[in-house]
Length: 295
Length: 247
Image 1 (spheres, rainbow over the protein chains, first blue to last red):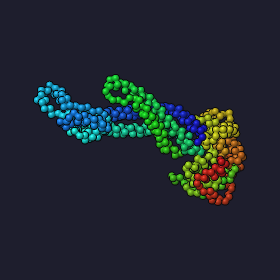
Image 2 (cartoon, rainbow over the protein chains, first blue to last red):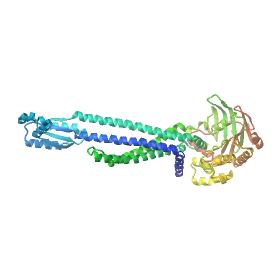
Image 3 (cartoon, chains in turn blue, green):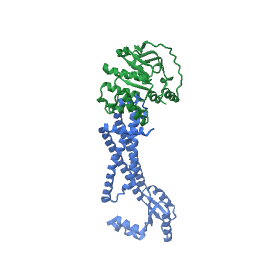
Image 4 (cartoon, each protein chain N blue to C red):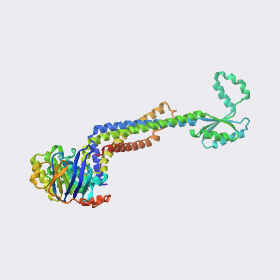
């Protein structure tokens, strides 16, 4: 197709946009709003995921050793644990230390433990942290196989509950995203439909003069894309400011919350949103054209 | 060049618009279709433009049965027929120049061609001085002249005029008729549907009279053999284009 034909399309598109400027503006703002909500939700879900992951990984595995082990043995076990893939760190807790911790927990009633001190029934243990939440189970199994390790415990139900929580968040997020996208497509297609309807006379004349269907379609499609992209642009600008501010606030007041910094997530999110805006615009136009091009 | 063979058209609502029409129109002719309202003139125009298809019968244009045209081929066929309407049908937001140039942009003519043809055609209809005006700023006669310019700017072999003088006063009507005659003189086949009897009677061209969907008078009663001389595939577009001198 000729370059000049594309110039024609672009000029027609801009003309149409200007002619229906009020409606275009309404469209753009509503797309912007939709994508703003979409973007915020994505950020929320991704952050929640990230937090859940971090929490899970912090779940400790406790490996209790056999009693009556020599120091050399204990050292060997320490090495083997550290050598396991997926082990982030491990800490040796002697039975004495374990008892002390217990005392602390008992607090005022420490005296109850005095009689126990003679024959400390607690065992030596290692406290192990896994690198990632998914690996906790596997690491626990591997540790259990090491000679000298009597028992391995971890808060299984906590891990699993976190897992299912993350999954539910992900699914809910996906559903919401799909709904929002559908709403945006519908919105753009509605705007274009009004434009098409307003110009049906013109389209009729175009057909009689011998314009092909695609020749008629392109300006409308471009218009839809333009609306989508402009709406996305507005939402992206707001989103960026907003997230920067939120992250900064959290850093200063609640620093222990593992929030994802903007550099890590903004770029791909923005790209994704623009891509969506583009396709939603194009698709919305095509949908409404299909119903009205039957002149 | 144009043949209608046993063409009938009944609309879904039961209205019988045309019955058993047989006509042959040669290249370069000037033909009037006359008749009262509802006689079937508009339907005939729509059939020729492939806006509607006949309920039965064939319509051969340059040997190609246009009834068998597929949807995506129709625009190319229509580029061979310039149309002028009673209500002008100009694009209100475009200037005179743009309205005429539009017909060329639609067929993706090169810009240089457009720059050459449009002023030439505007000159022919006598509207060069109004290139930048919008339709709303023009009189009825001027608007129709723009319509005419648009219809011929691509040099179509056929010009179809559907009641072109319907909205015009007698004097302006004659201006249009003069232009039509000139266009016909230059080789374009002109088909005009009208119920302006005075124009028809004065001009002494071939007249086909319609009444109640049938032809009641036609000076030219030839034989109406209706064999398809070409069969339709996409390469028929090429033959159509060749026949229409568009290649």
